[in-house]
Length: 194
Image (cartoon, rainbow, N blue to C red; front, side, top):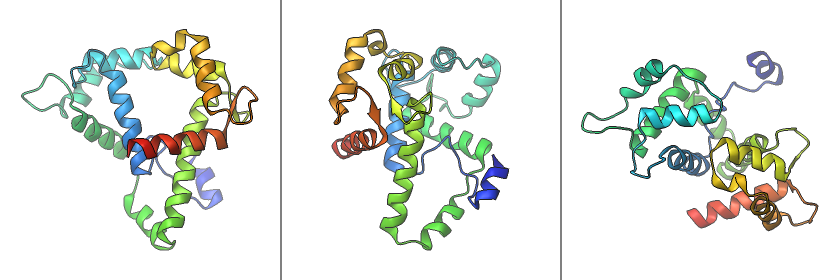
């Protein structure tokens, strides 16, 4: 990956964190809510372990506990959302070595709006690829169902509901979501949530 980044002249950046703050915050909030199975506003180490297991990511419980415990405040049994954001940033820094100053230097060479729009486009493309499992440039009902199932969402069990989701954003009515439809949908979600 580093070799590919060097070849194209791009710096290695984190794929764990979206650099567009509003997209990243929204994504983290949704992940937190998914992990918080009992809805108490805290994620316990057990809940994180279960969520990772559902996603097919087996982690040694003692290692998970060691990593997470330092982010849990002494008077709490789990991570609050703010603690979760702190844990995310810590893991991002540790595993990806994302350098904010490099981003700032690149942004200084661009006009603010151009840099922001390019970054938003890049983040949306990255998010689209999560759903587009076969890489054909479209999100099918089956691909959406697979991702929803991995996230443990009940909608994954109802294929009719998944088709409704697709239809609600499928402007050209081809039965799948292309990147432009996905981008419009995400932008409308961000506008409503801001």
